[in-house]
Length: 199
Image (tube, rainbow, N blue to C red):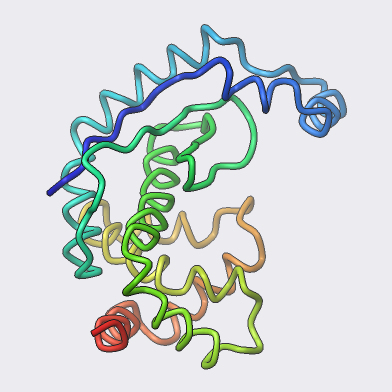
């Protein structure tokens, strides 16, 4: 089963970000304003079209690469103006370009499939926590994710897109460290080990 991803603007959900004192402070410092509802709704319509072309293939690849099955028929993805993107409830912020939005959404969906299969993936996290005990929890949590994402980017978008994700200046140092581990050990080897551990 391949789930339907519904990209949705929710004023109530977005207001958590729009009215956040921390976000407002950052925007004031940069002399910027939070995007209007109209702008976010318009952006949501644009990325819906892109997702319609690429989404089904991405969802299939996530399942195929991990060997995990999707458990939910429908996943709502809330689009917000500014803030942190995360996997539950699935929330993605506006990006400068559509490819960045798709890459962030893919990232969060890889988290989603792991959560939906937590009875299997718990053994992987036990293994990863032991093997990489000197790494931060955030780094450990993204080693498999980046390996899977690497394979999707490689197949669907090419080497340039992989490099763009690795070098993104906005990435946290823990994310960058996870990418380095994937570069060193190889995405295929990490995924192979994952499948063996969760059997």
